[in-house]
Image (spheres, rainbow over the protein chains, first blue to last red):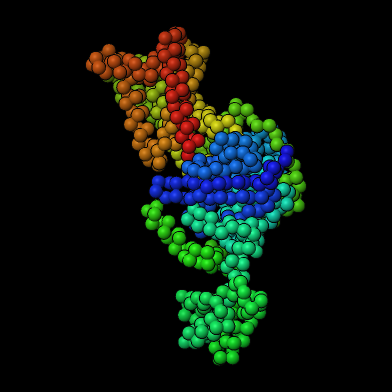
Amino acid sequence: MSTQTMSGLAIETAGLVKTFGETRAVDGVDLAVPAGTVYGVLGPNGAGKTTTVKMLATLLRPDGGEAHVFGHDVVREADAVRGRVSLTGQYASVDEDLTGTENLVLLGRLLGHGKQAARERAAQLLEAFGLTDAAGKQVKNYSGGMRRRIDIAASILNTPDLLFLDEPTTGLDPRSRNQVWDIVRAVVAQGTTVMLTTQYLDEADQLASRIAVIDRGKVIAEGTKGELKASVGAGSVHLRLRDAEQRPEAERVLRLTLDAEVQLEPDPVALTARVGSGAANGQGAAEQAGRALAELARTGVIVDNFSLGQPSLDEVFLALTGHDTHKTAADKDEVTA
Amino acid sequence: MSTVTQTESKDLAPVSTESLAALLVSKERPPRPSAFSASMTFGWRAILKIKHVPEQLFDVTAFPIMMVLMYTYLFGGALAGSPKEYIQFLLPGILVMSVVMITMYTGVSVNTDIEKGVFDRFRSLPIWRPSTMVGYLLGDALRYTIASVVMLTVGVILGYRPDGGVAGVLAGIALLVAFSFAFSWIWTMFGLMLRSEKSVMGVSMMVIFPLTFLSNVFVDPKTMPGWLQAFVNNSPITHLASAVRGLMAGDWPAAEVAWSVGWAGLFVLVFGPITMRLYNRR
């Protein structure tokens, strides 16, 4: 079976719309997801990520526009789409009353495996996911990390051509998160296309080859990681001063040397400046930051702590939309309330 | 909080990406399961849930026992001279009433389940769409059978002696369970339509109480006013109670059995498609 259509696209949508009452949860989304890659959908809570995924996985009917998965229309050929995709939802998408083994055998049977084959496949997956010890326990007694694993295991009972992972690491500790990332890499290495939604830029950065940034139901930026980053700058310098009174001086120096926007943090000794955006005299982010530090030392500003980081999702949003992610979430709450 | 997750990560065996890769290599897909096989698998799920939460059998054991005892001794002396006389008439009827009442829990369990993520997974599978719902009802049919057996046992202890013997009793139970299976599609519909467990419960009570009490379960309808007789004599519960009573008494009430089966068919034909429409639309 070929995993690619003639165009080589796993997902293609045009003007996809979904409304809930007055709210346009998804408001004209166009996506083109190449087969065999990890595609990141990045956005804050309430941006329309889950709604988009649910429409593509045939769980919600679009109110407008079109969506094709491997060339099949998600409404008219829903059954053909269901045969090729798997979904791991944001909340546990297995039966919490059943044990790990029972869940996998149940789904194996529903996917057409015989009793024996379903049991074998369940045991192998539990083994690979390090869940053999918990196989006989009800899923409601699983920890967050274990739930994620059993969720993903349930999604690859049959190797899907396209796997939807809706915020797979939200609420996980860093170690469990890294393990989920390893699983995603293993899955995509075998040719499965993965569509991953996330609130974390570093997650999209770690896994995805292309990223769409979604806000208020619209795609506000799309491209490779490099393209996206170039549009918001390579990163940010975070500074903590010893003395809050020196902050206006530090702000002035940074603005002068970096020729960039400087943000004053709620903490009175902290400030952040974006570096490496566009034409910064041909210098890299680290060189620019170094130059700024030297300049601060020369003017007598005492810096206690310094870090150079990737732009956070907040900063990407600020750069792309002019408003920050928290505000977006708050707006949505008002709309739905 | 953080200490909990730390110990968890330490205890948890690592993910083996090598064996995972080996498992993913196979792109083979078995053929889709038949409608029957998918429904039976969902029925198995319902049985597993009973196994893990056996308390949920309370409503098919304690409740029916209570019903038999309560009505036999409450009405027996007044209506038939003695509880022992009355139970000959009452037991098939109270059996029908209790089992039909128990069907309303179907709506509640559908409603609580649909909110959970697992429903999204079922709905994204390439299987016969109604099989999820049929699976519920198959599991419930088992519950109805348990309730019937419990009530008959209590009845026999209290002096119920069915003339139809084992065959008649089994035929009566089979008809009752089949009818209840069909009737339950009303509840799957409400379970999907209403927003909360409470509202499902409220609507169910509104339907089930008049429907079961306004029947010939307790007394012969002849003493009722004409307008009520008109309703009672045409109620599906009356037909079912008469049919089950007849079968257990060793008769062959062909007309009443036909009416019961007819009503059952109507319930499936009307509420089945509405349920599936709601299920697909969610």
